[in-house]
Image (cartoon, rainbow over all chains, first blue to last red; front, side, top):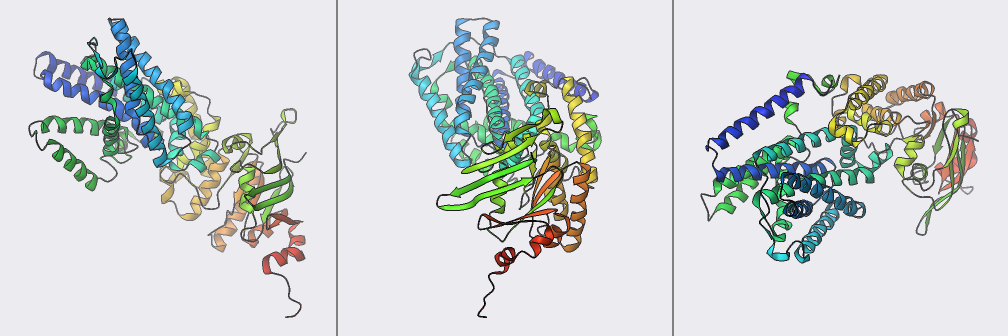
Length: 318
Length: 266
């Protein structure tokens, strides 16, 4: 199977159709600015959830620090974009932000990924807090007051492009030999190591890739909402992302996408019930977890459901 | 130089010496057994050989490479497990440690990962190299599974296989790392006599087919006495005997270790 197979062309066609349809809705004004914000939130949350799923769902490393990586992308992206108020500045900001997040991910990952389970969760939580406090005290980030007037370049086109790219690239990674190496760590670290998998290397790799995409999400966020303050990236933001991953299914890319869309829609529609909004939201989460304890998708993907129609994975590879 | 030479290997945990001053040597192509009563330190020796534990003292020398000119002697003590596997040592576990929630095929493909040449960016962007290597890997994995009669079950989850087949899959997975020395930790544990007999044949056969050297830990004496060419006996972390199966069978110290000392007053 080559890159331009029938299946991949179908996916590409479907994506373009979806993009065009939403673009038409925006231009004609059917999708008003209020729902556009929901759309942006969905895209950013998809990138965040899928990248966290790589770390937590697929590699099995429980991280509570994803908002920290997001904030690095957001601040680096915003600062570069404010210096260079142009499309080039916007794109340069995104990539610089993502790279900065990945580098921090590697630096933090090497010492912390020796820890397991709850201990790792607490270490990553601490790391995210350190990042937040650093941004709170830096001159260039304007401290607690935050950054204002970040140029707005993020629109539906860029959101769509980056979201689609993130999902496809992470999915490709998971379904490669490196991806299987990551999954084997989740399954049984001792056995993985005995089978020749350098577990430290692949944990750090997953962590860095996850941080890279969280950085992209952060940069897109800053350029869409043109306002940043350290408080946006606290503990609760990390939990929000984790909720999407767990709800969608740890180890399912499709699940993360579905959960990100679902939760954003629920939040939007619950705006009507201002007082009891959070109660309803929490109750819904509880109900979903009772009926689908492994998340909406478990570890299944949407492609598994069409397996019989398109032939199984291995046949497709040939 | 033998394929594996263990010199004065010692491992102590705090005040307890689990393995002390063990000397072993295994020639290429041999099938050697390591036996001893429960708690004698057999699995500790395996864990030392495979890098799970770092030896307190002593050497583990391993001859890497198949071609005469490329042969290299490597000290395994202190290497990480994945690195030991890279040198050509593969193992199975006493209590099966398959990747339970993954398919049979993925279990084998994960073990093949160390021989994959494409990098992270090829994975992300699916360059042609990705498809070529994945295709080759798939056919290799299927060939290996076919030997163990598991090809038809390649898409099943490992946990859904019957016990005997899980044991087979573990051996197949170890072979997928392309080892020259295979360590089997109680391969017949939990098997009935019929399954054990089949396993005995299988071990003999894979040794020939894959040009392997095998070291195995086993409690089932019918298997050990039948296939092992030489046997090492451990007791309380010390080597108490070594030799051909016949010699071991009649060795007084070995009988004592297993059954206790003969009481002259009784």
